[in-house]
Structure formats: C-alpha cells, structure tokens
Amino acid sequence: LFCTDTHNRKPLGAIGKYFTDVYGLTNEAASAVASVFGWMNLFARGSGGWASDISNSRFGLKGRIWTHAVFLVLEGLFVIV
Image (tube, rainbow, N blue to C red; front, side, top):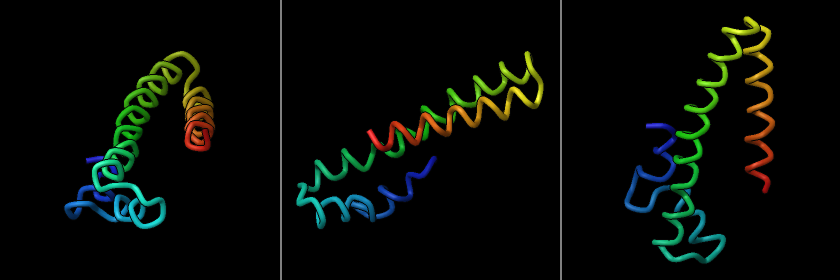
C-alpha cells in the first residue's frame, strides 16, 4: 500500500532494522515505530484529498494548490514534532 515497502519488505524491514541498529529498540518496538510512517500516509492522503476536493469546488485550482501547500507544511511540522 502506501509506503509499506519501507517496513514490510522483510520480517523487520529496512526502516525497522535502522531503528534497532541506531536506537537499540527491540524488534517489536522498531516495527511499531516504523508502522507510524504507513499510518501517517493513510491519514495524510485521505484528509488531504478530501480538503483538496472541497477547496477546489469553492475556490478552483488556486484553492486546491493552497490546500496542498498548507497540508505539506503541516505534515512537515508533525514529522519534526
């Protein structure tokens, strides 16, 4: 599905292995942390598409572009936090 290749390709996955090697997490904890990236994509795609469709119906293409820009900035902030 959405970016699941980073954590589901092998039993632990590339990003899960990174969390175990760098941060010393257990396999279970590393897999849980890695799954956050897939869940974030599901939320971001669904809510971003919904908001984009609404702004497009009200403000046209300019509204859609502004919505995408706002969501991109918010996603970046959430990744940092």
